[in-house]
Image 1 (tube, rainbow, N blue to C red):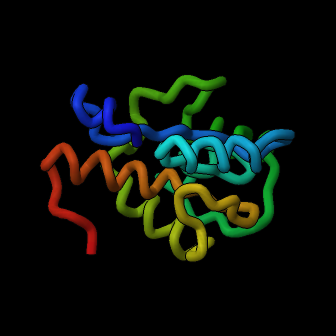
Image 2: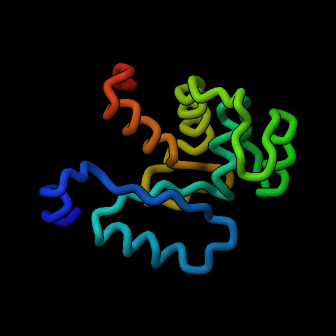
Length: 134
């Protein structure tokens, strides 16, 4: 991250992206790295991270299939339902890590994978509301 950002009180900068059919993902990863931006990548899409708040899912999948499964949990379009289990983030982190242990920020993991767990952990630890994960 640029020195100027630290002076302005920026602790970290994250970019959250889907693999889907991202034609310039490798370039985006390289640009983010060179700018000091952490990049959380979900493959095939962010919906895998949402699903891991409810259930295990380790099989190769498509975005439309994930959205269909999430409809069964009350999801409609891009809006989270009022009942979304935010408190299950540690379970979601565990599921993400078991499914693709090699996945880390800036790494395009296999399908399915997501490094949004690193962002979630960062935010929780930075907020001081929960002890750091071990």
